[in-house]
Length: 455
Image 1 (tube, rainbow, N blue to C red):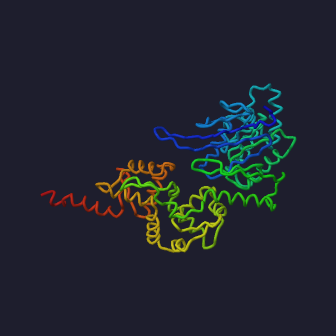
Image 2 (tube, rainbow, N blue to C red):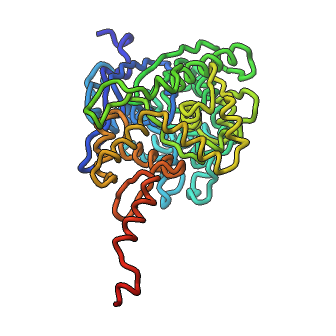
Image 3 (tube, rainbow, N blue to C red):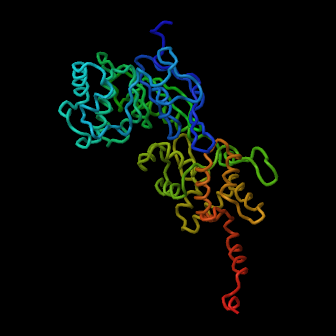
């Protein structure tokens, strides 16, 4: 096999499941095929929960996938990849070691002279030459991440893998480090020629990557791969740069805000029996009423780009998409292209009193098949109450691709807010809210007044 044409990393039909103790496994990645070649700079971009970090760890050999195979230079990878170095989001430094000790960890078996030569080179590369004997507690967040990058570079890896390396830093420090990494990748004389990194920042992906892999969630999969042939150094204000950013905006928005109506998203597709029906595998996103109402109050009357909303919220794009999807499902928001716009109903909701807001939310929730199912499941019970265990079991059957516990908490949050259901936390029982008064009346009737009881 021609070594020049052999990918450094090749993923074939990669799938991965996570399973908590005693629970059914949940797919995180599904049928991913991807190659990383020499001189690639690949960004993994997508919403939270789509498996970006898991996929990066699979490439590095830190996680063995439950399906598929990983090849390194044409050989089946078993264990940690010898050619990949990782930079983690949370720095992962040993606090009892100095910068000198932390950076030298990957090359401890080399001769002392070679270790020192490499150490001086990488510390100068990341601008930490004067901090060789400083401890992590003496360093700022940006300096700690520089140590992490130096530790990855000292092994002279063929592939540098970075998991959201700038997300824990302030904006100015992140911008500085991003520029420095960009210069390293662009320098033909620097040994770092290949890189794979996870990000949720579109501008960062376009600034650094030669290919941008856009992932979708539920489970994680490759949605589209966008090539980026802009020459280094890249100018974020250049029209060509902005065009790629806009294209990625459109792809991400289409992936995460599909053109479906609330009626389509919640319609019944297959009967289970007279009292239970399966519903389409699109349910209420895992957000709270407070988050949706906060979004609506923040939007105003004008159409707003979803990415601008994320910046206003100070939240990751995938989180804001979930909130927008919930608002759209309830018909309070429309999403033409990648904008979000209040509907007339949404405008009335924002202006309404607290009591009227609850009423309006209740009316919209009861249009959704998932709440129809919930109310019906309670009503068919002989005692008009449903155990949490029974509901979890029904959710798993009706929506096998959802996370039942997260969905359960979401339904409780919305159902209690809108006064559709009540929940007895101590006994783990769910009732229709309107039956709560009748239940109390029956309980009171069963207990004689104090004077009667004492006679």
